[in-house]
Image (cartoon, rainbow, N blue to C red; front, side, top):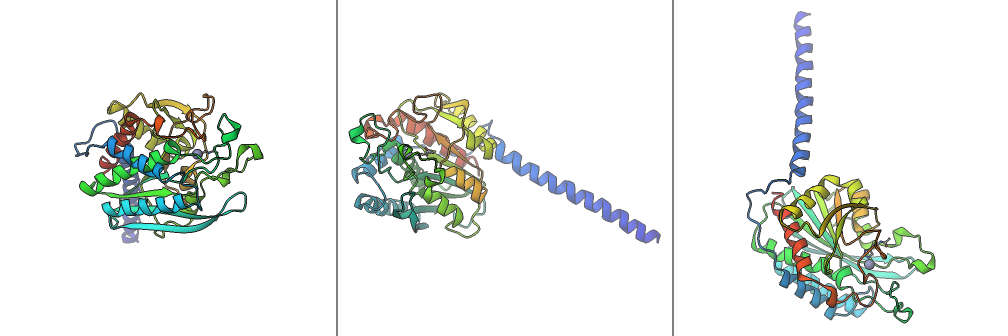
Length: 335
Ligand code: AHN
Ligand code: ZN
């Protein structure tokens, strides 16, 4: 009997130790993910803004990358070939996706992986398609024309291609997946009384339900959307703050530390529907959106949003560098 009691006691003690051990581990992981304040002593390659800028020009040279057009098909091949120069691990995920108006979109999510076997992974993403209609153009004659999508599309991709190049040159020591989502910008136009939020971000909805690797998981994700405009302001957007406040603070802290605080405002803004929403909701990867957005501005988004003037004229290498430098530092410091 005594022996039994002792065993029971020991079991309880062991159980408590195990419990507190687990808690400790969890805490450590969370703390690790959050700490940003101090620069880690790791090598961070230099982000080349000229290269990012050229990547945007190359995309625009195809014409608007509207799904089901030849420009879209040609650009997809170029994006895939570009990735293959940097890593052998490239997957093109094809899907036919139904748009709000019933159009079936031939879409391709284009994915590049670095250190595919490392279980410690970071997700970087952006959309690469162009909006078919410049429905926010001040001139009604332009509203049925497609958007060149230099900022709203090509800018995030331009930054991510440059990051991919750097990842191929300097091993970050952790897994990185770069996902270029298709069919983000085929959302229902407002004048059709569009309240159909799920008509946006079709490519990321598909990928989140069918990740390129079954059971895919990453520690956190960063979405880049409209990261190239001159004088951009990236606010702390509500959907990101709801699902991934620690990641958002950490990225903003890094930006501040690197001297890019003028682009990364600590103003809290409303939540928006963008690719990160579905990655958060469906896959449960805490993902933030670095986006030029503030609901107190006339348009919310940048001045030329969904107009035919979203072209190279408005793209700034300084803005691209602020974003690229910040995101690359976060990635390499996540080792
Ligand atoms: C909505 O307008 C609901 N979402 C905007 C997401 C977006 C459009 N990002 C780029 N273009
Ligand atoms: Zn758009």
